[in-house]
Image (tube, helix red, strand yellow):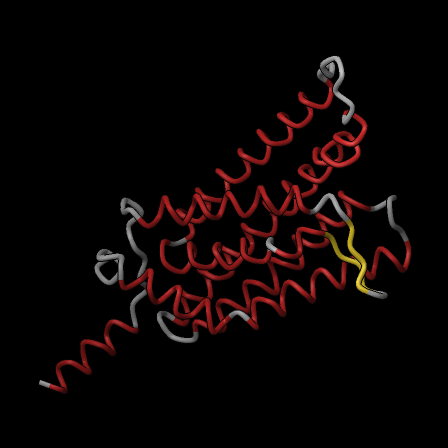
Length: 231
């Protein structure tokens, strides 16, 4: 009996599992993913300096978008992850258009915060444009690399999929985002500092959060009844 159990476990580990998206968890995870993305883009309008290190407000939350993206790719596969990524793209465009329309609309009599609104949220369209480009390239690469590694490792070496996909996806995302969003605002060595700090920070954060990401992915897999059944 034990031998049969071990044989079944070994056979299962040699298959590539993905869950079906028609469950209650997938929409909830996608909703959190899109919310994190939108909040991060608004926060990214502020540049932050910690001594010689330069980053932006998006650094506090945006790395979680990649962790959630890893959950989507690992549990539901490339097609489902791509669907969530494209939904995030659409909502970023909606946010950019909304802020732009609000900015150019004439303020009401007595409204004294137009300049403040433009100074903060008036920059959001550029941030969103940068994020859309970096986000699409980075997240799609992240999902693609994770799934391709999973096709080789099956259910083993989850750490390799999470870190490998992040190294590739975050580099592309950070480089594209920083260039479109802030090149010209900051240049030269200061710009290089901004890119490198953002990339290293986001990548290391995912490594640090692996002890959290692992049980989260395991929890989602256990609550997806189709995960072990899907081919």
